[in-house]
Length: 166
Image 1 (cartoon, one colour):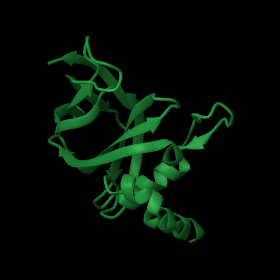
Image 2 (tube, helix red, strand yellow):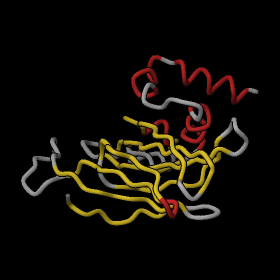
Image 3 (tube, rainbow, N blue to C red):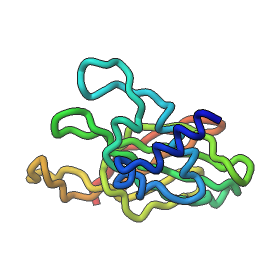
Image 4 (spheres, rainbow, N blue to C red):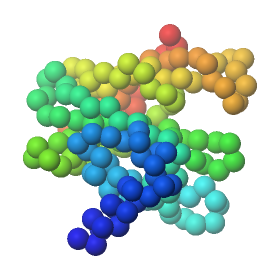
């Protein structure tokens, strides 16, 4: 119960208002719980582990079903700070297990921010168009687009596949 209260406070905090508004829908509680409880290297160079939530600077959720798997899924694309002007992109996939809660299938580091045209495809793959650095782009302002996909393994795990320019 204590974890539920702490998570509810995090979700309603002013600091989360800007980020949290991109994590929505029925998996919000479970996604936020995953972000709170999953540790990753910190960006300050001092602490060894920080929650994904503490490193998150942006996120968005996409819901769908695979044509060959009747389950309901959510993919959350995260932008995580790595210190300075750097950022890491990560995708977290969760599956609905009982009509209410979503369990994590896995997460993977991916390329390309601002995912567009997110699709849940046959063979349990998720595809999207990501914005990446073009050959002449300044570091602040990527403009190139790449098609990318993520294989959702059974029973657990994800595998990110190389991108191709479009």
